[in-house]
Image 1 (cartoon, rainbow, N blue to C red):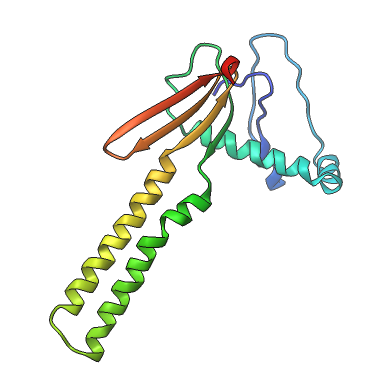
Image 2: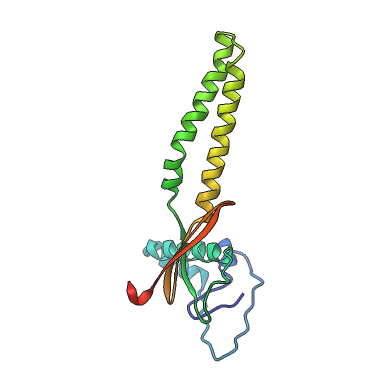
Length: 173
């Protein structure tokens, strides 16, 4: 991995309170800032936003590290990467969840009023609901909002259908 100005490394060991085995080599004169764990946590206790922002940065870096970034321009760096809100995933899961509940009720109805169609219909509706939920999860997982030093990008992927990248240059924002 290439680190750029403002990046950090070895934070996993820092937060896990264990030694790390990370190292870095610079290609040009650089400044390295090292935090004492006790001092950092004392500051984070007094200024909780410090720890929250650091955790947000770590999450963003991990998410960006999992992306295929061949589209990045030379000297372009990712400053932030986020997914759509989990609330949107939950909202998209309401109808499939209701369908799954309905399928359980339909399947259970067989034991009250035996009929040949309750179980096949309930199982089919349940499978559709589960597949619909999985589709929503995969679709949510594929969409990203990215901020780089030159542009803002929305990547939307619909599994097996298409990939889309909409972007705006920073000077237009």
